[in-house]
Image 1 (spheres, rainbow, N blue to C red):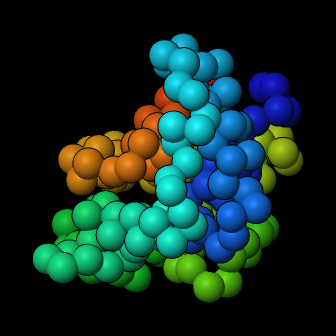
Image 2: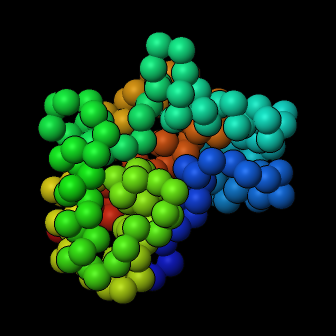
Image 3: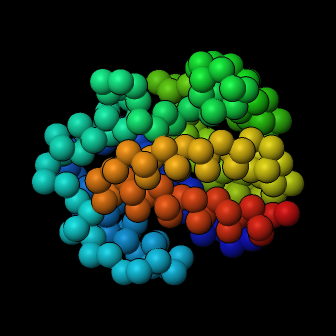
Length: 181
């Protein structure tokens, strides 16, 4: 498997936006990655919101809190096990996979089953060439819930950045799963 992969970038891109410094570079990287994956070209500047505040508000609406509920909760436990409650089956599964790899969740402020954590974990497994564990993690865990997350994300009419990010992540996950199984 090619050691150059986008999963650390994807993890960062799904993190809460903290600064304007990386908005255009992230949009440029996302547009290039989308084109590499065969999606139609998108001008990077069309992905960048008017302001950091706008992107933060969109992040909160989609992934954190919103009237009527979170549009696309980024936690495995919401989708796995059928309860829709955090810190359940998906959380325990993620921790079990992390333990098998001998790693701890990378972002201490997020639950172990948050998409940011899980995408970073995919990157770690690729970096460390733990491809058997990667195949099991994708097949038994991440790809069991990501399609539902992606459907909810796209159904929430996200801004162009998050819409493309969801589609690119989906393609990367499925491409990687095919390579390791």
